[in-house]
Length: 492
Image (cartoon, rainbow, N blue to C red; front, side, top):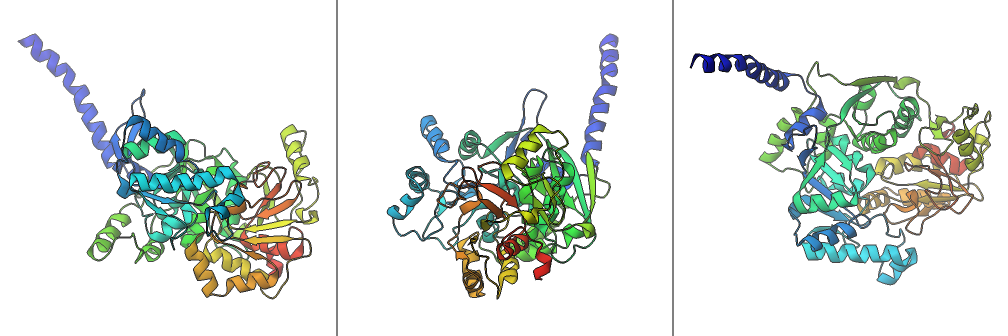
């Protein structure tokens, strides 16, 4: 008996140490990300297995869902939580008016079938779909926030890498693959390894003509396209806090271009003002309860990040990419840097047909695209319209303006923005992803140079052989007027 008692005593210190460690972990200051993560862990990760996370909102579209629904049928499964699933059609849809399936066929048989299949699948599985007859239809990362479905503290996934957009509300939002789309449809859960944390502090006040797009391009230029790999970024600092929700969504949208798993911004009064009264936001007494819960999500004083990067926002300039990834970016008036013997760098310059040592303003522009989940919201269109107002698009330049949703389109038209663009010589379209990815009939012809407000400038992203320069709506609009890559500040 004595031996047994002694053995028990020998084990007690280690057990107590484990309990103490758990207590310390619970009491330790937490970041915004850590709070949201912990609130959604169904089963903790181990060295051998990822964590199981509960998903609050699953956004779906026509491109990454056909195989996922097929998987459900094969397994004899229904959708676990139809009430937490929200669908739209955006990637493959034409931005010209659609009145029949024949109108869809102009984008190609494959794309038209994706749209038809999405309608069939959502009807069969009883899911909310905002199709061509919905006033809320739009790009998935524009529509979700507009409807108030995107909320602080939620876990949000979608079969699209720019799901990070929703992190602007203090949500943990990231893209998933087609197989994972099937897993979430069937279980409302997802296997995930816990990422590390990276704080990016943007201080100071932005200069006139410098936008949220310039901020995120500058960040990517600073840390590189792999600087956020394995991390969730939390954007902080006075420059971020002073941004509107539209601007915050632009910043978080391109977190993936820095290699990050997601990007987040702590919710505040700006967030609450945006959400209040939206169709899927809490109403009445539930709203007050939600506010208290959302305020508690902000990171605790003393919470630690694995890495921190600080950027002086007051020194930032309008930015433009010159190569074939978003990290190849410079202030719009600076010279293209030399390759210094880097073969992949030289290959990118050759593809883009730009010369080291010369400014981008030497490059003649063929196409300007205002749109995408990065920059197609009402404030983006207003910024571009302010540049082109009472001016004309340069001869030989095609300017395409595509609102991010039918709601944005309606508001823009009520403000007369469509008339400003049309008077300048631009095309005004229906909502959709459009020229961002060149799979819906809106493409940049081979060899032509596009200044685009989208998020990716890889070879052929906007069409086979197309060359893409990423920039803000202001810079894109200025370039349309000048017929070359231009600093927007000269038109303010």
